Length: 267
Image 1 (spheres, one colour):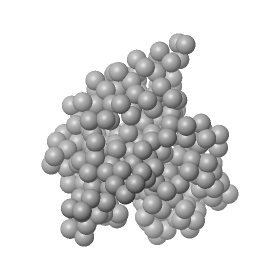
Image 2: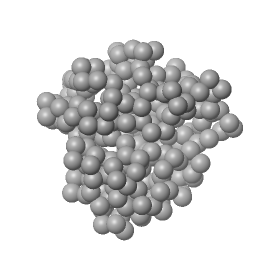
Image 3: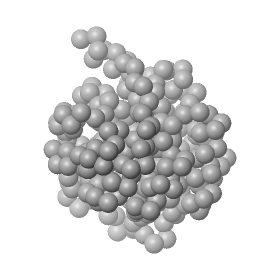
């Protein structure tokens, strides 16, 4: 089975572009994040979806092709030697994606899909379940148990905000304690939590100006890990650019967050 990477006193980080846009840019982002996390001693998973199945519009970018994208993720692993996270959307994808990915991520809208959770669990890879925008933290215990009862103890939960009205999300920071009670690492998605979905234009909006605020609160309240999508130029990102962190802001943000974590541990 694939063990989650070993944590130190720092939070761990899941970061990368929303989707594999091509080999060159994916490797560029991965190399820079690896350099930053190495300098700051932050355990790191590289995240990029090989395909985006949940899009607001039929015209939205979904990927460069499944085989091509997974080949890029394999190259990231081979060249840079760190674990890779990618989404799966159907039972059939689990075993296939698991040939490359170290962590199979269950999208928030699919967190109740029993057969998908079981299929992911049976690969033996770590399963990261994103909390549905419609789910309470307490209710996510059922999703965790589905993975464990399928024979896989390696499971994480990710908070990504709760629906607030029709076009906004909020983070209830009380949820970290409720989900940690299930005995698994809990991650805060600092970028998707700031989405503004269901826009009439068919393109999801966001509040990237609040990423640092959300991240600071997450570190202070005790999340085990942070999730951030990042891109050299979010305005040109092919997916979810409206709520991504510019890559040149990652180092200073993580430096600040480490100082907060240290202050909390020293209390």
